[in-house]
Image 1 (cartoon, one colour):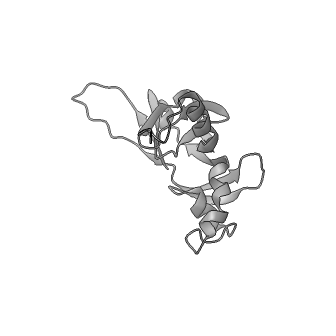
Image 2 (cartoon, rainbow, N blue to C red):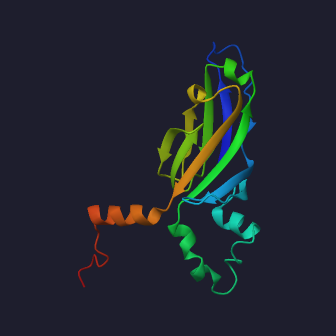
Length: 167
């Protein structure tokens, strides 16, 4: 997951505008949905690497640890961080939040207001968030819902038999 803030200003094409970027990568906080305890997290990164770094889980690549860690994929996770919006950002017509690699079912909130829901890790998502920001301290929260219930619901809606050959 990579997140950037990019203010955008509309001007005539012949006047180049220097794009300003506030990289939201780095230290975030992570918690399991429904729980209050937060751990240090790194973005870009993954829930598994953050849990491993915090000493909460054993190495998933060692022996059969992967089997014992399946609960992680069945759990909803919340990443959160505060960031400061410089006064010069607020002078732009648009401020774009760019997210790459949101895996997969994500709900993005800015200052406790829902911005968007995504359902595809393999694309870049861009949103104008100027209306949700204020000068100074802001909070971004990204909730990642487990794909397991989503997949089960989709399968019930449009079940495709595994034995397509009829044999």
